[in-house]
Length: 201
Image (cartoon, rainbow, N blue to C red; front, side, top):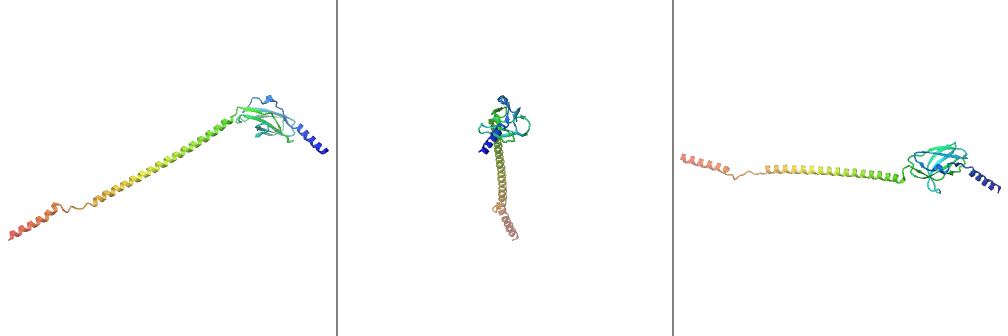
């Protein structure tokens, strides 16, 4: 029984002596991304770690570690200019392992979540359009190449056909055996021979 009481008392003492952030509510008004925020604390046991959180008070999630191994009582945090506009909170831890938190506050001046999403969508659409254009250009070039090859093949075939037809017509023309000049030459020879015989007789 005495052991249990001592354990509870030690736990209560640890909670009572936990490190706390001493910034008042006014310190968290008008905070802008790209500027500095001075964070102060007290009752630390050993070095402290500062962590940036976001989300609802009962469901905070870690954004990033601001600094660790701090041995003083304050720290000038240079808020990143790229930090999105949202509500945040600060978590502080020391060697006791018992964390403590600041109030939730808004950081303005950075990119909004919708702007970041729109930029990502626009970039994706541009890349898709570029890929589609390149694909269409490749298809058009390929089609033109095939059309040019087909035209050249057709033209060559037509030329070869015309040459073959011309050669065939020239070679296959038969001589005219019924012409009058060819028939007249033998007849004249016969008549001359007949006249010579009459003269001799």
